[in-house]
Image 1 (tube, helix red, strand yellow):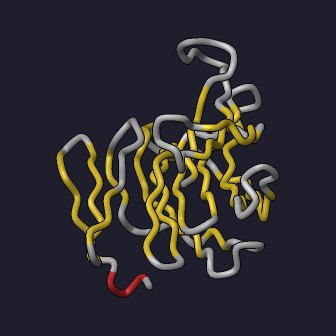
Image 2 (cartoon, rainbow, N blue to C red):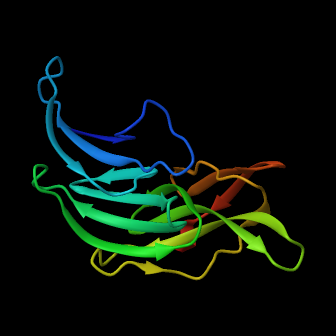
Length: 170
């Protein structure tokens, strides 16, 4: 009965340099949500699994990207379990103990931007392991939502829909 909302605390819209924060609400009474706490972490993309929040975020002020895991067992006082710096993180999806992150990487050879899916092993939440880049690289200049249905991962690039069997990945 906890709602997790990523908000821009200062403005009605987002602009370059703005950073989102996380707010937690008790929604056990659907007509009367109660504010519980604010977590002052950048929070662009969030997955909730049990009492854990998996957060992909960009700190636009410093151009750093982070992958953070929070424990919200006590939503009034959430605890950061781990935070890892990573490059150009975007949308995320989770299957078992693997997080899939949509990323943009810059190829110095041809000066193009390419999309890739990065994997993070979260078997040990206090020490997530950013794994070697997957071979699923495609030309694209923006992040793509990632959808997992069973053992199939779907993501978009400028050519269309990519379908990847991830059965060997877990």
